[in-house]
Length: 84
Image (cartoon, rainbow, N blue to C red):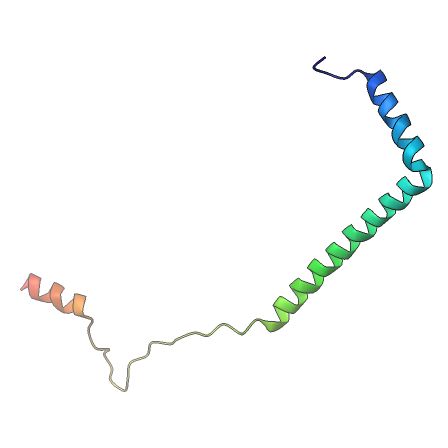
């Protein structure tokens, strides 16, 4: 009783074909295919708009303000004090 044999599945398929007919089942499968194609097209359009809207990457350049040496960070000052 736990599993269905091939004859059970054949009867189920025959009943489904009698209820819906070949025309309705093929129309249903065509509708599913159109839905999948529309979904893929929508996903591709979303990727294109996301790429078009992305802003350029901004970078921050750390340059010394006029002097030859940059000011020391707090951790560098602490390290020099500990060595002395």
